[in-house]
Image (cartoon, helix red, strand yellow):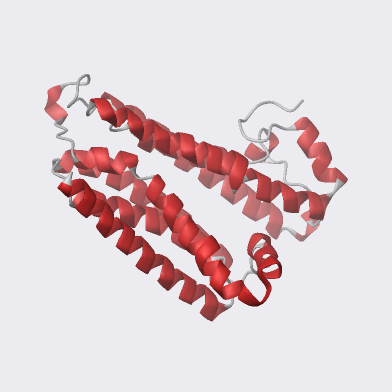
Length: 271
């Protein structure tokens, strides 16, 4: 218990300091979309701290640290080089927050956006904690508390998610960058089968990470709360609802037709 409290206290302190630095960066650039760059990095940082203080062996720790850092660097790097470094206009979500927050915009951005996202990142930490206490040995067979079956399945899902999300991001970026597509709805590639394939494959990544340590201990089943929470977040809170709100404002009936014919989250054939 003492180890648990100490590791989470360290993670909370790190999260507060990291999100404070991201807020200063966003204020300096006058672009609070930098929080999207920080989202992946803060989660990877939390994972690293929890794993560092764990009593498990190196195999178990690397089983979750490698995928979460691959995910974080890919996501944060993509957003930095396509949104921040290119001086892309601030995301419509944050521009909307500026109007809502008025004179207290900087204060409320810090508490309602940056610190809130830091808190949400801490809620995703179950797989990292359980992997940190795990003794995983490659020669112990596939099944059992020290087996590698779920590591293998988790990594398969993780790779599938990364590839799918990369393809989705690439197709959308190319579509938006083409002047011929101005005012149109992106319905090419994976976007033909889901209105938000990037969010779907993001969720698949977290299903993969979440199942890695679930056989390590009876309580490790709680790791499944992480992909469940990520699904609720992406599908009903900050992902799909925000994206669809602004797509309806900018695309109107074109997007309504897209909504009618294409699934919101899970990929499937057009209606």
